[in-house]
Length: 463
Ligand SMILES: *[C@@H]1O[C@H](CO)[C@@H](O)[C@H](O)[C@H]1NC(C)=O
Ligand SMILES: *[C@@H]1O[C@H](CO)[C@@H](O)[C@H](O)[C@H]1NC(C)=O
Ligand SMILES: *[C@@H]1O[C@H](CO)[C@@H](O)[C@H](O)[C@H]1NC(C)=O
Ligand SMILES: *[C@@H]1O[C@H](CO)[C@@H](O)[C@H](O)[C@H]1NC(C)=O
Ligand SMILES: *[C@@H]1O[C@H](CO)[C@@H](O)[C@H](O)[C@H]1NC(C)=O
Ligand SMILES: *[C@@H]1O[C@H](CO)[C@@H](O)[C@H](O)[C@H]1NC(C)=O
Image (cartoon, rainbow, N blue to C red; front, side, top):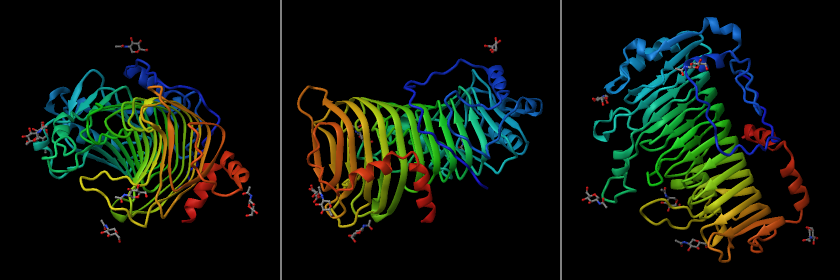
């Protein structure tokens, strides 16, 4: 299957806060009549993605979970009804699996597996809640709640809410109370091993652990999605990407207790645009290299983001002892308000109860560009480049940075073993960056080419 994903860098629309149209089923079905289902400043074309033309409306088959016995009172167990409705929708061409509005469906851990008949739409307008008691969780599915896999060309959409009822899980976390055992909890929504997927408009909240994970996927577009979990909920990453390529996140508003977005090993060609993050731990690449593992992340662009009150801003985190690389990352047009560690590369990351030893091996970090980043830092080190002594960070580029401290004191840049250069206005000054070489101009040129993603996808495919 050839999949073409075209990503334009031109759109800088400052759509920082997502807006959600009030809609109901009739609106949603009307939307299916739209020629393209695309937003005004849409830039992505998925060539193998089904398009919904008006002609198709007549043949859309509505598969309503209520018709399979779902009660929707938030108390009755609707797991079986959802499973049965899935079987029907998945095996029917141009089906719409409908979770109707104004109801709350209690559903246990469930695997919704493809492959499905073509042109499936999953329309979530109501609320889906998880049972809230960890002790009763299905032992066969300890790490998942709503899990979708092996799908091709599927659209998830609606104004509905996926609510993990995570409160008791958080209290049972070892991050909350050291006497608790450290065990993983379910991810609320997972899309695994799928391609040509769009996710539009839904809210994921109060997840047991991660809110929304995309794993082993290709060509995914997530837009107008809201993630919301409390600031003190442990390990509740907002949107987590692993081993996925050609992923676009647009106009998403994420507030949570861990990373708003985390991008881990095996990801390439990731574009994030118009992202609101806070509270949370920022927008992260990593962690990579845990337990001497090898990790790769390449060709990531974040364009236009607003971070407020987060514990980190733009972060790359790797463990000592790892290998692999993080390469060709560009952050641009980012505003920070009261963010601790607005810009941070940390090759000494250690999220473990035991302290971590320094080692000679490390995940190599190079070609990282920060451009047009401004705002306020809650900590003294507005920029921190804590790089491995044996594997220095290379080609770190700073252009037009203006970061002040929230409390008015002087901000500074911390460097350990980092090479790169700066141009334009850079505050706090970053004189500790040592010149990596003197081909700065050609390097900047390569970075400014809009071919960045394309060229790196070629590199990646050669691996
Ligand atoms: C649903 O939307 C349609 C079209 O916008 C509108 O006519 C109708 O009144 C709405 N129904 C409800 C229950 O809001
Ligand atoms: C499913 O959820 C219901 C309602 O919370 C619960 O009683 C039941 O034990 C759960 N079943 C499994 C297999 O988790
Ligand atoms: C931690 O858990 C233990 C055992 O359940 C409990 O006795 C203790 O009060 C908890 N501590 C806090 C701070 O919640
Ligand atoms: C990682 O490698 C170091 C150095 O070879 C070794 O001491 C350590 O035990 C390894 N750690 C793991 C988790 O394998
Ligand atoms: C590891 O190396 C860094 C940089 O040289 C140093 O600041 C840090 O103290 C070292 N950590 C340990 C545990 O030795
Ligand atoms: C640039 O590199 C060349 C050759 O490597 C060297 O001769 C020259 O002095 C360098 N210039 C600067 C400004 O570092």
